Structures are given as C-alpha cells and as structure tokens.
Amino acid sequence: MADQAFVTLATNDNYARGAMVLGKSLRNHNTSKKLVALIGPQVSEPCQSVLKRIYDEVRVVDVLDSGDTAHLAMMKRPDLGITFTKLHCWALTHYSKCVFMDADTLVLSNIDELFDREELSAAPDPGWPDCFNSGVFVYRPSMETYGKLIQHCTEHGSFDGGDQGVLNSYFSNWATTDISKHLPFIYNLSSVAIYTYLPAFKQYGGNAKVVHFLGKTKPWSFTFDLKSKQISGNVQDATSHPTFLLDWWMLYSSAVVPMLQQQYGDQPFNSGCVECQYSEMIICESEQSFTHEPAEPQMSSEERKQKWEQGQADYMGKDSFDNIKRKLDTFLK
Ligand code: UDP
Ligand code: MN
Image 1 (cartoon, rainbow, N blue to C red):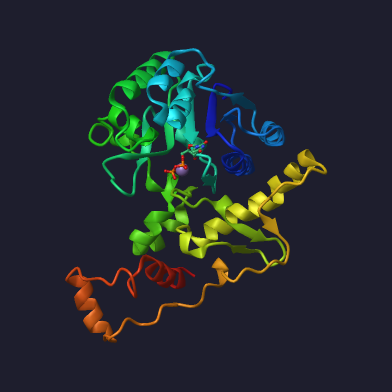
Image 2 (cartoon, rainbow, N blue to C red):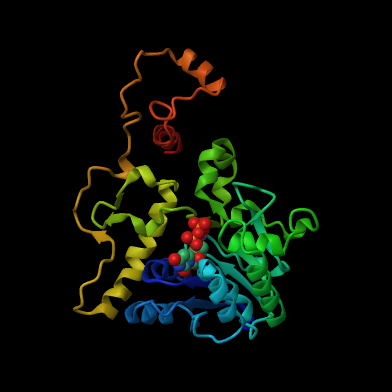
C-alpha cells in the first residue's frame, strides 16, 4: 500500500551507511511498503545520492531551519537535537501508518506484517522491559501527535536524554494496557540480550526478524576484509553476535559499497572495507578463551564460583566483561 512506509533517520554519513544497509535489507526481503529516509543536512552529497537510489523518499530535516514548533523547542533544549529530529517522523502525514526503524537495524526477513499493528507498538527494551525500545516502532503520522510530542519533550525533557525516554513517558501506558502493542522481541533483537540470556537466544534467536546493533559500537565502527570475509577492529567493544555483524558487512560490502564507489568516482572515501589487511584482532577467529593471566593467588573454579555468588566478582581481572564475553562467544560459535 502506497500510504504505508518504513522510515529511518540518519544525521551523518556513518548513520547514512547504516540506513543504506537497512534499506537494502528491506528491499531484499521484498517489502511492498515505501521506504523513507529522513536525513540531516550534514549527510554528504554522494551519500544522499546512494540513499536516493535505495529509498523512495529522502527528506532533509533540519529542526534548526524548519521554523516550526520543533525549531522553537530546539532553542530551549539543544541537548535533545537528534531526539527532535527523530520525532519529525510523525510529520510524514502523507502516510497513514509507518514503521520507524533505527539506522542501526538490519532486516532478516519480510516484516510487512508489522503494519497490522497499531500506534504505538514496539518491543520491550532489554535493559528495562517495562519500557519499549524505540529502535523499531509502529506509529501513525499526525501533526497533532507531532505537536504534542514536541511540547511534551520541551516541558518534561527526556529521562534518558534521547528519544526513547520521551516516547516512553508520552506513551506511558504501553507496558500495561494492550498486549497487541507489545511486539515480539524477534522484531528488535538487540545484541545485548544475546549475552544477558544466552539459553533464550539459543532457543529463539533463529527466529529473529530484525537485529538491532544497539549501543556505542556500531557495525560501521569495524573494518571488513573483503578477501577473507573477516571483521576486524576493537573486538573488546563488540557486543554483537558475530554472525549478525557479518550479515551486515556482507550486505554492505556487496550491495552498498559499489554504489558508493560510483558516486564518489575518483574522490577518496573510507568504505571500511580492506583487502587482505589482517588485524591482530579478528572477531571470527577469536578462539582464544581467556587472555588475562589468572589473578594471584590462583583460585579453584569452585572458589571463584562461590566468590561470584557472594557478589565478589573479580571485575577487573578474570571476571571482566571482556573475558565473560569472549567465553560466551566461544559457546555461540
Ligand atoms: N541517529 C542519527 N545520528 C546520530 C545518532 C542517532 O541519525 O548521531 C539516529 C539513527 O537512526 C540511530 C537512532 O537515531 O539509529 C538512534 O540512535 P542509536 O541507534 O545510536 O541509539 P541506540 O539504539 O544505540 O540506543
Ligand atoms: Mn539503535
């Protein structure tokens, strides 16, 4: 249906690369909906051109220029700049229903059935499941709602400093009122959940329809070796499942990079792909289980377990997050 659309947002070239991959993933899974990218004025010309090839509509939104309520609100709350920009998606009133998706999400199968849901439908946030995660949500564009959201945002701010805080306090009955507005977690599977509840991930993770690379380190923070199909970078920061990260890079390098190359022509640009440049840390080969030396004096694993259960984890040493994550990675393979 032409009046329904998937909508994303990218205020800079990095998030634009995410939006390109997201758009391609939606197309690859034969969505029948329109694709809309809201972009900030900082997005470069070549990136805008590529987005235009993937998306039906690419709309520059600059809350500072817009001269409307968002602009005025922005002057009072400059800290909420990107939040105001995201709320702009409610102004797309030429669509009757939309699904907003963060630019750091990747679609693994057709998700057009999301349009059967009503505003505001979203999946629980893994950190606080009585809040919804605002990386994927179903909504109805409306100038009235847009105005109210901006007003709410200006008056009450955001309890987490971003759009998720504002949206959760505005749609405050989400947790309790209507279960049909709770999207299954497979529509917004964030990488953190993999590490916090591994057995559930093993049981249900195969049904994932949308992966969300939530958190500080995004897929584009890494580099990818085209020849060996290895991802490299600061493996310490990787909270994503290596397979999903590889899915993202395979799509980006095969479908997006050639378009970027065309647009940039002879101009140099950093695609993040390297050929045959091996880094010392390669995610797909992170076989080494524990790199840290055992803490002195050495403890038996039973003693360590007891200490752990008593809340005396060796967070800076053997029980550091990096070590736990490395261990989990070996299970996940
Ligand atoms: N975003 C953006 N530019 C930024 C930060 C965020 O365009 O500098 C958009 C983008 O669509 C992104 C979304 O806002 O996916 C939410 O931010 P992010 O995904 O970084 O937050 P997280 O999901 O990690 O909490
Ligand atoms: Mn996100």
